[in-house]
Image 1 (cartoon, rainbow, N blue to C red):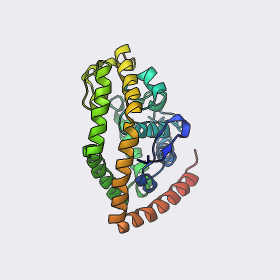
Image 2 (cartoon, helix red, strand yellow; image 1 turned 120 degrees about the vertical axis):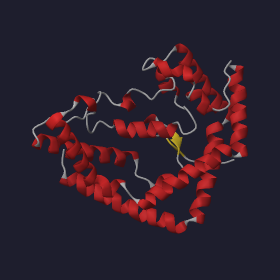
Image 3 (cartoon, rainbow, N blue to C red; image 1 turned 180 degrees about the vertical axis):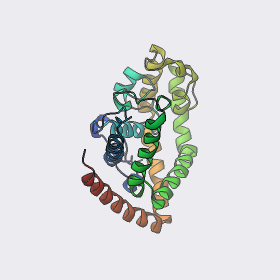
Image 4 (cartoon, one colour; image 1 turned 60 degrees about the vertical axis):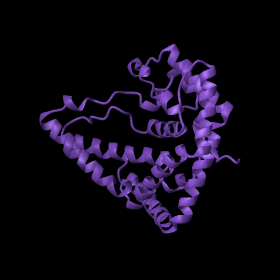
Length: 256
């Protein structure tokens, strides 16, 4: 069985699936949020207030977070991250500062936050909102549900579960392991138990080839949708090109 190509940029490996070519890249998503931040900051300064953003723009944390989420499509896969954070996202991907609590903003500043937020989102709406992209996203959700219900993937889950049981863990699939209620109260400092389970999880994925099986099955389903809906994807690709060009122009018009 052939595996889907794997993207290993910046150390976060994840399956490269056909639908990925019809969505904004992690870098473009980063640029989009930076654009929102730029417009918001300028608007807030004009109103006489500091920006309420707690995340430094241009640091790459959004793109890192997107890649890390993608690497977890079928559960955790990065032993380096799990060795430090268990099932949680890495601290680096969650940003380096805490945002100013919105409930601490009131009066004129609160009104400015609302007005500036609406202005910023209005600027990026044409980039961020697209019916074709939404249609591709909806199809992606449907395909993922079919993937995790596919007999081949279910068999891989059984093999993974058997492997985990050998390590003393009882989970039906990787999603239940990641969502174990035991991890809820551990915050930013995961227990040795959580870290151990996450590392066993990753080891069992490698032993059973779970990610290779699941990504191959999902790629098959996605390619079938590409063949079934050529007009939808042709339109999505055209719109994606326009959205990318618009984002570049807006970034030039709104320098940091």
